[in-house]
Image 1 (cartoon, rainbow, N blue to C red):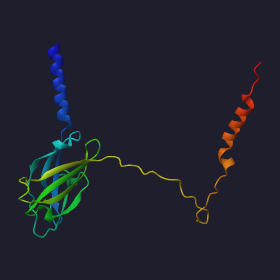
Image 2: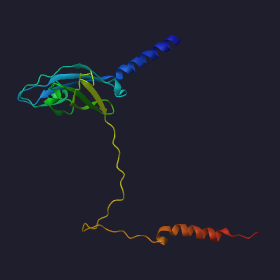
Image 3: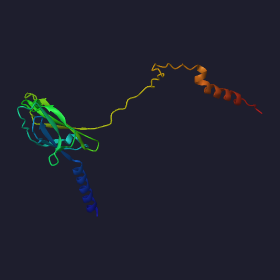
Image 4: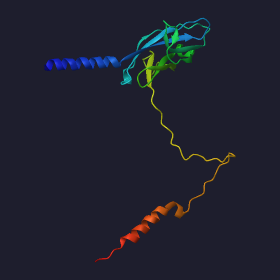
Length: 190
């Protein structure tokens, strides 16, 4: 009985670990006449552990000489549609001396929203890791602004200055409580 419970818990944990690991296929399309998107990379990611993000496959893009810009995003070759938001990047991001960094933005559920690419200049003296890198950015709710009192405008559109209240207008209720305590507080000792 104990062995069965342990085995089932290990099996469930392994299933949950595999279920959270996702992959995204990133495509690239040169912005030139009559070009089709081609596979650029396959990225594996887990929104619970962003450090586990890795590039499974990377195909160096073949970009025509006439193209200056490329479109990058998630693409479905079967339906010929872009699945997420796309970004436009310069061809220079893939030139010699640059290492591409693929940035994938996902929502809180892990669904891809958009993809971008940034070429990072390689300094041979500093690093030996020249390959492409992947970064996952999880969408979060931004901080809400703290607002002051709204500005009051007259029908003519001019700023209305509110009158400052007097001491009695502000604190009449405290004076009333004090008077009540003074009137009802005294009693005889008998």
